[in-house]
Image 1 (tube, helix red, strand yellow):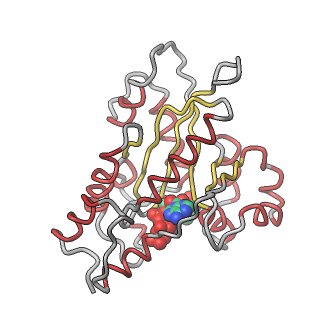
Image 2 (spheres, rainbow, N blue to C red):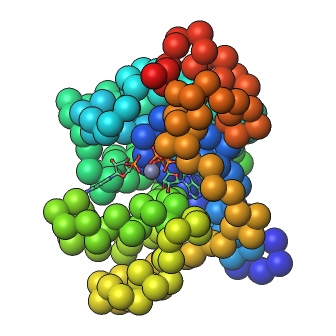
Image 3 (cartoon, rainbow, N blue to C red):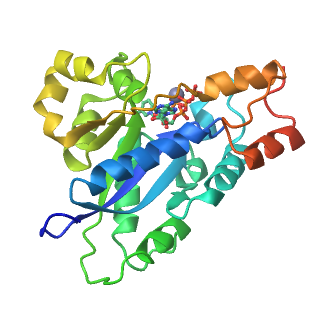
Length: 239
Ligand SMILES: Nc1ncnc2c1ncn2[C@@H]1O[C@H](COP(=O)(O)OP(=O)(O)OP(=O)(O)O)[C@@H](O)[C@H]1O
Ligand SMILES: NC(=O)c1ccc[n+]([C@@H]2O[C@H](COP(=O)(O)O)[C@@H](O)[C@H]2O)c1
Ligand SMILES: [Zn+2]
């Protein structure tokens, strides 16, 4: 660490369908971690939070199957965790609620959640208060969805950006700088939004993976072999 300041303890949370999890889902965590560590953050961990079944997006396989695949995908990571909390609620959770719950649990040293325990284990001195920051990690398409009428409450956008902060990874077809410029609200809050460019762009998306699988085309080296085996054994994403 180049600075003498005490680094900010930070955890990254990504929400989404993960239908199925791809190598890019893992990669956005690595990109964000590199960026934050160069900017005086100590990144204690990452959390993947798959969405509830009631999100009911076309082609969404069950939460239990998506969680199983995420568990396989994160096997090769020593810092990315899964939280099944969203999938265990009565219905769909707004992302602001998901962030609130996870930040509270992360700052409770006695939290019984496995992801919280894993992250606490990375902290040598666990003096109270823990002061763990939680940031929302997303691709540029997610921030652009803020403009879809009726999809996000303005007060939630304000809460997410002000009280947590956003790390946005560039994605082909999106222009997050222009999007922020065109929004008065986001321009006002932009000091809490970091845009991290992916200089080795990769256009993997779950939609393209599902399409390839439907067509019985190979998805090797785009998603992990263990996830491929799971998809094949469970006959997922066939036509
Ligand atoms: N190639 C990518 N580059 C940057 N961000 C990505 C990429 N793929 C996924 N993400 C981000 O990961 C998070 C979870 O994404 P999600 O589960 O919707 O995956 P997806 O590939 O966008 O799937 P789908 O095509 O089904 O929408 C979102 O914030 C999304 O923007
Ligand atoms: N108002 C909100 O909080 C809100 C609106 C739309 C999507 N989301 C979340 O963003 C994610 C989007 O995922 P997909 O890109 O797979 O649709 C999901 O986790 C969903 O819960 C949140
Ligand atoms: Zn998506």
